[in-house]
Amino acid sequence: MVHPLESPVDVDFKIEEEDWNVYKLSDGSFLKTRYVLLKVGRTIDQAGTREYGFNSQNLVATAIPAERKGPPTRGYTHLQSSKPQLLTSLILKQ
Image (cartoon, rainbow, N blue to C red; front, side, top):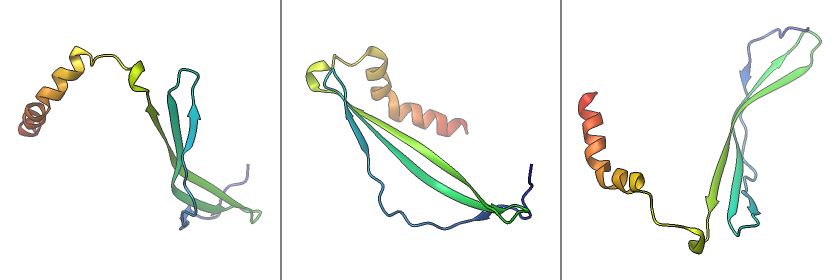
């Protein structure tokens, strides 16, 4: 194994294009995904070869046709109605 001669160095980059991949599922729903590059680092090993590492994140979203949606679940509506009180209680505990 060849070890790097230096610590990783951050490499700046410019986003040229960052589109969503959109997939239509057989039930009529849409699935959207996007790969997001967050950080790039570079090292140079003893042989002079540049090696790149990166941090990234995958984003996923769905769009469901209205006719496929049911009523909200009890837990969800309860959370929605109590959200301001819940947030306030969490802040006060901190």
